[in-house]
Length: 179
Image 1 (tube, rainbow, N blue to C red):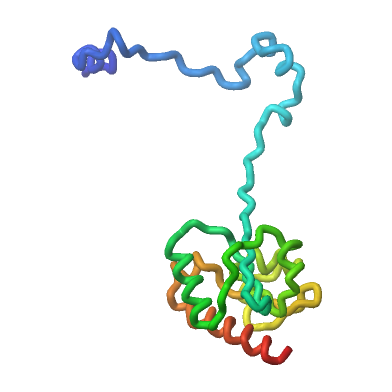
Image 2: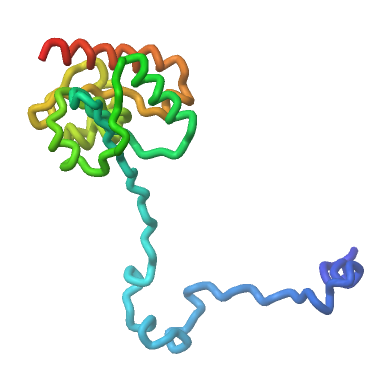
């Protein structure tokens, strides 16, 4: 039976390739071998916690300031195409400059906020309810009507939900007429 060393030698890798000793486990390292600042630091402080990706949201407003669309920022061309089609179907012209903060968005006093996605809807409504519970209802968010619907990524992946999203957008149009 050939050993690993025989194989490495046959491949002419043996002088260049050397087997290393297994790394010692954390328990085998004596404290004296650690740098002084690590030796006296509690273990909890030396472990890096995983970072959580916080979504970056953007707010797009209609030129007449009736609508404010709140959605996750994206660089995906297909999502931009769906969004353009939504605006065209609703007959909405959107301002060229996106709004980066909710405070800036509220300065325009929109009549209807359309939240595209569960996380942005939950954030704006300060609730933990699912999107299924939030859809199809006109909510009040700081005195402004809010409609929750699917995000653009979801619509790209689940074509069958486009009809439901259109129902939500029609509800937004109807709510605007009732204001």
